[in-house]
Amino acid sequence: MKQQPIFIIGRFRSGTSYFWHIFNQIQGFKAWYEPLHPQLLAHIKHTQPKADHVNIKDYWTAYRALEKLADYHDLRFGSERLYLTAQDSWSALRQYIDYLMTCSGEKRPVLQFNRMDFRIPWLKGFYPQAKTLYLKRNPLQLWYSQRKHIPVQQRQNESYADAYELMQWCADLTPILPFLAPKAGRHGFYRFYLLYRLSVTMGSGQADLVIDLDEDVFNSDEYLHKLKIFGLSDAQLATAHTLKSVPESYAINEDELSELTTIMTEVDCLLHESGLSQDFGHKNLAEIKKNYAGFWEKQDFNAAAVIRELNQSWHGEQFEKIQLLSTLNAMQSDPERHE
Image (cartoon, rainbow, N blue to C red; front, side, top):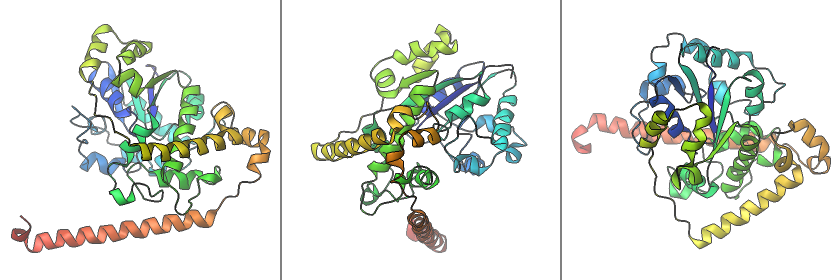
């Protein structure tokens, strides 16, 4: 590629949209929003920006001129094989990324990923010329941001099919990380924090640049200094600063903080005993399991529990769709009553 690409990587709600927006507004860059989203093609046609994505008017401008996008995009890119090593091969995914970078023309391509944080070694292996930016955020604020759209009575439910795919990610990763299997009555924060810690361990150890959304953006302007690694000029950094918006933080009460802190301690112990907190991102999973065999030999993949969780989720979604369709049909048959 003529231009050195930039890959923005992070968990959902960690600031990836904001940094995509920065590069999307700066001349000389071609920024691609969520190229691995399983429903990308439908979103391009129907999805408008979220209200809390301040000053973003359209996510999909870069895609609208691509006549062959459907020939390259595959929903499996964002829903399967979420863990990839430098030794793994996925030619279709490579061809898709290459296609987007080629379609960037003479501009420097910027790809914003929310589904690449467990694949960074794979990405760096095939694109050694790229620069990677990893974004992290306070886990408690991130938890609230990912769950605030969910009905209150479901926010702690680890099996709820939320917009940020906690349950779906665990279903894909449980065969290699068995402790992500569903467990009745367990707080959803447990699996969330497991994925969060693994993501931060991988991203912090592999990325060329790490930016903390809270400390470097919300509480200071340190991110502007850090962005200089990408060769941004003072004028470009000034443009980036005009796009900054600091949301109100979530106030956590003492009881909730105590409960979540206990879960974090439990997860931290598991990750230490498994060797993941020490080596994830530095060694492949097979090597970690060999080095910490005492822990991993006790782990069993509960396929039945995963299948049951997915089935129940599917039926729950179908129930909600039926209710929605019923409401829409009622509105169409008697529009005056629903004004």
